[in-house]
Amino acid sequence: MMQESHSKRKDSMKTTIRSLCHNIDSIINYLAPYLPLVNCHMVEFLTNDHWNTYLPNNLKEYLDQLDLNESLEQFWNATNSYKGNEPTELRKWITEARKHYLEVNNDYCLSVEQLNERIKSWGGELQPEIKVKEFMNNKKSYEVQTMARAVSSVYSAASGTCCVEAGGGRGHLLTTLALGYHIPSLTVDCDPKTLSAAINRVKVIQKQWHAIAKRIHDGAEEKPPHFNKDLQRFAQAFITKDTDLGGVVREMFPECKDLDTRIILTGLHTCGNLGPDSLRIFTARSQIAGLLTVPCCYHLLTEDSDVELFDVFQKEYGTGERTQGFPMSEYLRGYRLGRNARMLAAQSVDRVLHQRQLPAHSLLHRAMLQVVIKKYLPNTTLKEGKLKRISKCDTFEQYLKMADKILNLNLNLPETFYTDTQLYLDCQWKKMTLFYLIRLCLAQVVESVILLDRILFLYENGFEKVYLVKLFDPVLSPRCHSIVALR
Image 1 (spheres, one colour):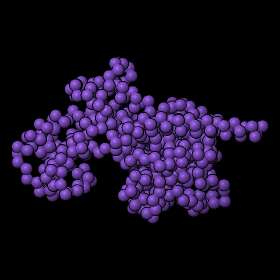
Image 2: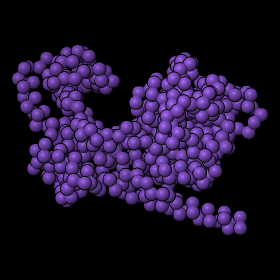
Image 3: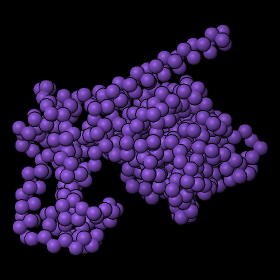
Image 4: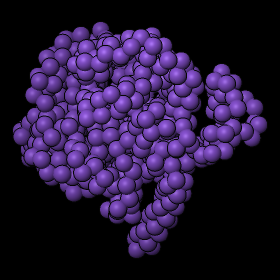
């Protein structure tokens, strides 16, 4: 019977892997002709004529016939399944893109409710939520409240002995796990200043815990139980795929060194290569009993196409050894997305749609500045970071004068130039706005490739309790998917 059960699990894994690969194939085949579009840079919108270069002809010709307000109204309606169903070119574009977004499918992508059912089937106990509003903004408070419950429930299912947060930063998540759920918790971060601030902040939170925290039980808020303030600790380390987290835990919790170490590795928005390296640690270290991470900052991932780029944390704190952030799976070995595509993947189409949010005019001003530089200062290379200091400008003349002052460009242009330029930009605003929104429709397509690659990597390494879980509301928290795995 045991052999038969093992055989069934093996067949089930093969079926899931085939389904995953089929899903990935469908997405990358759809994305293939649009890789130049997702990898273009909005700074070059005017200099490289993005409107005519990257948009499909039928879509471009359709939009050319409409004014901006009519185009926008059609866009908002086309993204709302309850408003209209006319098969316009714009609706076709949006509908086709959405077919390649991650969807809850019961096999490897779950809702929170479905994750809870899995946790109970694994022998775990679902924990109540702990609500803490102070010391965090509303977004962070919501994320910590939701994720802490999920992590503590996975901790129960995996018979964990300690939680470790990779790149814990201010330690908000593990503060809630330690004080609210009595879980020994270790925040690991590479930045000593961040850790020092986190330690001081936790001391303040501990003193006020019973005044600021509420446990939600059967829909009602009640005071949390008493806590042990010694359960949360901090360690400075730069985490790579080779980090021995079990050794770090035993060093920081010497009273537990003789016990069987079963770590739940977590991370609320693990940046860049820290996400992939967390998965690699999970596969390589038997002490890691479970994993629940939410990735972000896809532009900081490294892939073969980024010859000159390094993860900023790897560059500043690491040894300089280059690791592969994408792809992780053998199935996608050799496939490339590109940095601008990965940067696009971190943008939120859900929030833009919810707020009917248009791009800032500074985006068009920056693109026009590129035209000016190319024409008058062709040998000048701009440092993008400095231009972020430019405050809101009503006209390009204001923007250019502020940029000139910051970058010492020493431009001396006639007043007629500004008048003619503003008229030109007024005509380009419609195209810039629509191009931005149309391109944004592909953000979740790119993100789907990145996330599916990660769980396929775990399946390829023999793990079967592996899921993507839509943990957060994407309007409140755009990086809403978590990766959950049990050993």
